[in-house]
Length: 96
Image: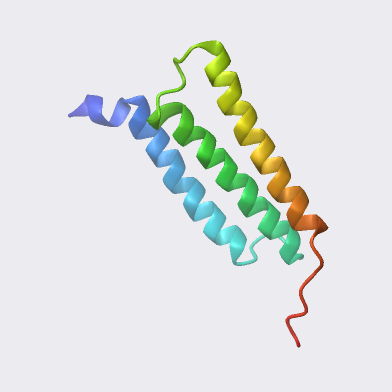
């Protein structure tokens, strides 16, 4: 039973749960004065979670190097594009 809690997959799962709680707290305004920065932080936390899922649950951590590099590049480029698009989009007028 002890091996169940020491296994890498269990630790990654705990990190994913902690990241979910962290993104929930950040999304509700803890630590950020600007909503755009909080939203960008939630996007970045989400991309970190995607990386962990790709590497550990899709088992690309031990895949050939070129496959892992493609997967890592996909996650990084996706995150960069989403954050860039979020900051380039015009601010919505919530009062209207």
